[in-house]
Length: 310
Image 1 (tube, rainbow, N blue to C red):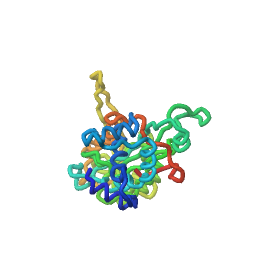
Image 2 (image 1 turned 90 degrees about the horizontal axis):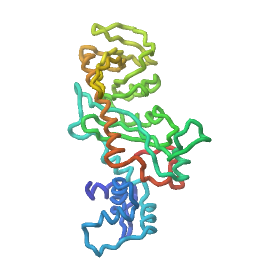
Image 3 (image 1 turned 180 degrees about the horizontal axis):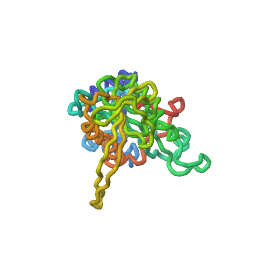
């Protein structure tokens, strides 16, 4: 990540330093990024790793100076940096001219502080019995093939995925095909997605009543969900278990790609498995860089408490 890119994010956020400091804003941004990679250690240790290859006489800031620098820069430059970096990159999957993307959510633990607990909540069936680490809910849209993030929102664990999904409508445009799990097959959300011009391919519950308004030659059919006309595809899939046994399952898919000639059912069934790429991206986040317990501090006074834009 070039210094020019970081400087551009700082300028957009209005966080460029006005005088020479031991910890200039650019360095603080790199410190924050490194802190995400080394979430298991404190910022003073992260600093030591950042300067390990430099002059051994490089000054080491104290914990108070680091805290002041982090507060001075704030979260805005990271938001702008995300905006500059987000979006599909060369190599993203396309199918019949459409950019194939996936949407899904996950939950992650954050440090056990009163601020985080108040902002994000804890996992519990009853609020009065809340226990364990606070949890944050993260929802993203990624480009399949490269798994680059197009947009993301996060916030309280107690707010559902479909609520956060509405915030991601801002990044959906014509020419995209969005793959989604059955949690995102709510009628109102389907209508909102279709109004963006983005096409949708999502699973729905097998027992959902979807009366046909037109039968198609490939044994799929058209139906109405709210004001949207969608196509229903019933598919049989075989799943090989770790034991070697094969299980035959049933998937019901609905899609806004209603032309059975241009978008054959078997192609869409084969394509739907790419939705798992977003699951892989979350596995990488949690396992590869050790993000089971995020290093994010409690929200600062005056900052958004319930949701945020990564």
